[in-house]
Image (cartoon, rainbow, N blue to C red):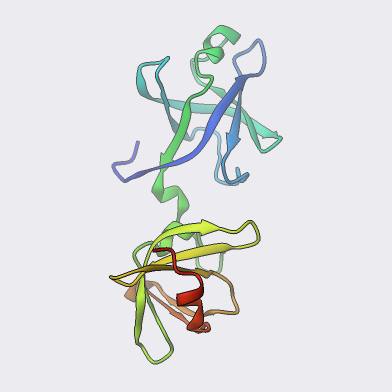
Length: 177
């Protein structure tokens, strides 16, 4: 397992078959990052904290996947995993050039206007069910801005900066605290 910060990605909802499969619910409803041989960390009080499990097979199911782990060979063993929170290393969430980025890739990026004036730093994310929102902290207050193409001028990964052009009234209208 990686030494980087683990990311909470889902939960084991239930045992699924007599052969030890489990139903994994993906919080993001995305399983594109799952692969055979990948190692997931499960955190459960039943299994005594955190333990790593290797995926032997998986297939899409509802808002997640049915997963078979190495060493989990019967329903009793899979029942023990029920309720476990699933984590993966954060390096699984680094986009390739040209791909849609993962929100966590812009965490702590400085947001600037087109003149280079600082509008704050991205400190967290939110959603209004229509779009993702950046929660930007100015040093005195936080506000939310939709993370949409219409407002994004450029993302400068090498400078950890997002150049945005949005109505500055959003800073007051969408003030968090």
